[in-house]
Length: 506
Image (tube, rainbow, N blue to C red; front, top):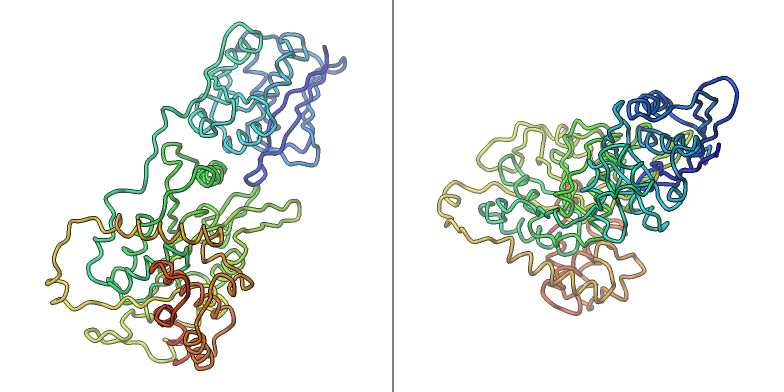
């Protein structure tokens, strides 16, 4: 046998396209050539494979060896093809039977000793192999990650010799099992009761959680904006298994890696305001997900929002609407999911004390206007709720009783009840309602419509803002278990657009 075929998987965003590793051994000048658009790490695999085979007492053929990674127009990167290349050489040279190769897919980087090392992006490979109804063999270091997919048949190995013994029928491999993997939820140390006072902001946080709305918190330093945002995951429902696997697949291909122990934890990403556009959106070669994709099905918290680059902030506009981000380069195009809930925080002015009765604001009207102008109108239109978080007098803080009861658990029950109403009524959260959905799912009485018309004319708000106010009012009605949107629901929803009023008055 001079030709062998082994299956593996490449990485393209969060999908893992099939790669057929074809190995041909022929007469001619001895050497090993790899074709099929391999990048540097793949080209270097020939030296790792040669040493691994020789150090495990296999014969490395002194002939002309050609490795074709098909399809030829798909870029291949990383050390994931070391194991399939080594097996292809062994099968083509007659040192390994080929009867089991067609039922399996293989991935793993080889050490010079033949040991299998961890590779990035195993979870998308497992999902794709399960769909193709083939077994997958991965390094032992990837076993916990691979075991998350229950419907897949995945085996793990620590050494090339173990894989060869399995293919010869001389030994068995360990089946990856999820039994030993625990689920670590969001830290129980955080609770909504940690935030003293601020009942208006806490109410707004509950509404945002119930309808999955985006929110901007604005107030002086030290009023609890960051504390409120960090407590949002404690009142959100846990991820369902399919959503958790999507989140895990994104983390699996990221530069930071993936911790299987926390695979069902709701993502909470808080990038620094000096983050670049690529860090937030994603990019690179090969493309890696950015913060907005790492926050998929979770929360993206942007503190000190006006301090972010204007170019970075404007890149949020499209994914806030489409729930995905497309990274286009000359040679490729990659789509990453980005269904995140945006929570942002900012000071009311550059010095932070505009409107504060106890600390004098040092900003001129021109400085204040330039500060607010850092946030474009189209971006603000896409933020459902804008909340003022005022500073509290010391006497009020000292008089507040200390309550050790967990508020997050109580609020979470109300949030889950409201989410259940939305799923029964429209099969999606209120945030995701389209303009065409509003007449059917957001009925308003005449008083509510009249109030909305007055506000829209007075503040000259856009149609997008109108739709978002209606959707927030729909969530408030759901929390009150009301079928129709009443005037009190609209009135409360209008109080959550403070920055619109401030920009217009400025």
